Image (cartoon, rainbow, N blue to C red; front, side, top):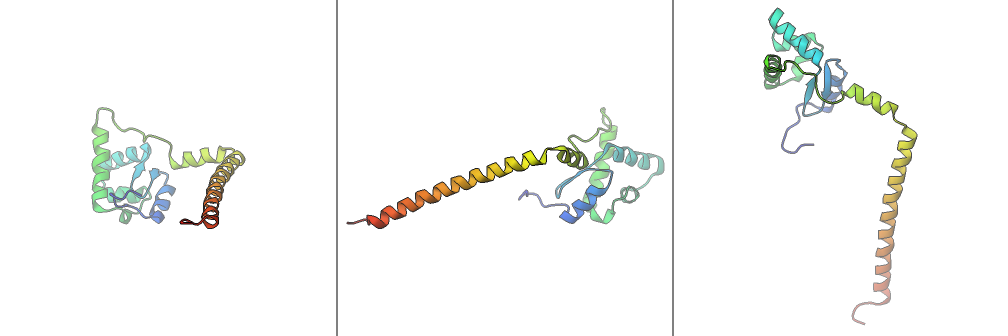
Length: 147
């Protein structure tokens, strides 16, 4: 967690946000919308004159999950992006759904083996440290200082 920045969303809210098809990614600190949501948002503002909370509600979001400043920032940022020379852009990186699909395709047996090897390596290092400690304690016990 980022100690300087207060989370915007609880873990429960993040779980809800991730389920919305208009959500690209969601973390306790940030929500990223899909290009489809941005296009929908612009259409609703320009053609229907809807407010941001009404657009969020129509898109399947609970407007009460968002602080007033967040609602204002969503509107400001999407409108600014739409009027920029580049126009609306898709979000960068894989969405959470795409990451889940990629994870499911991984060879989990090989991954588990790799994890097991790392755990065993850490355990060996820990045991070696214990053996060295016991040697030192034994040496001190057999040859006490000052004798």
